[in-house]
Image (cartoon, rainbow, N blue to C red; front, top):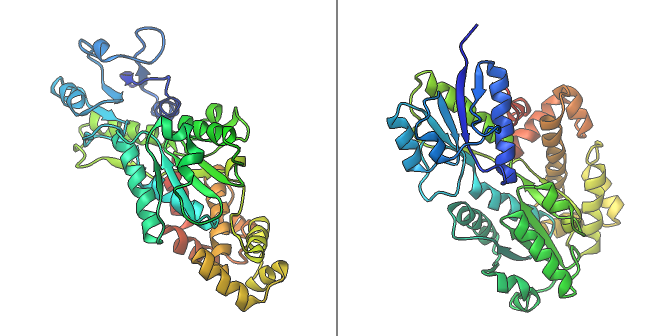
Length: 376
């Protein structure tokens, strides 16, 4: 029987994201079989002070560069899982925060939203990257964005929105779920309807924050358990004498969990709105562009022109996106065979499904499943 290896988790469990990271670490530790988690106060949570005289195998936690360096000098490998430090240790596994902003912008644009805002704590590195991803993607499509820079700006959100030109609903990215709650509450206080006039998207998908309000808030699920799993895998390799990483590993955000706060299709053109609803409700079937045009009561060529003008995509692209989004959820959440999954996403053959999936995601379905689950 292999001797046990003591692992310390230097984390703040009050943070819901960190709690889920710890679950991923525990999952890897259980698979390993020889890990034992250091728990000086009964829970596997330690402070920096408690690590000073500790002589265990390795540490995973919210560790800045000096902390990782000091542990390494003591012969203890350490991996950071927190993305807010200005300079990340090379031995870090963190969420790709730039990708969060890009995902949010693409999501709003595909819904037909043409007015945008963002708010959150911009002083931390992770929030800055979310801003850059969001603002940069919007700029690539020719859109500007209002920045709500303070708590006072959120409290006076009705007045702030007057600075936005144009008409139609406003898509707001809140870089943290608690901030998104404040945005929704302020909108309601100002008589702004959510989601009809303001569509709000949070980050982290903390169910306690997102679901204990009305309307419930959509949010980006980050994949914290995958961060924990990969951090544990990196630590395991370091403890076995593996090479020190050259740069941090960045984990792509998981998915957008839709709730009422973004449950709209913000297109002024009724025909396009009807077409998008039909696609969303029927993409699991082998529908064609002609089927969409018929459901929307619009000539095919006219509908194609409107899609390209309003959404910057073709009708076929919209069908593929909806199907692939469904496929992504099934690949992560089920063990369905790829052939069966392809049919449940509207594809007659696996080959066509693979081709469409690779075009949209850049990976094969099998490669995506491996990347977003816990397989080695």
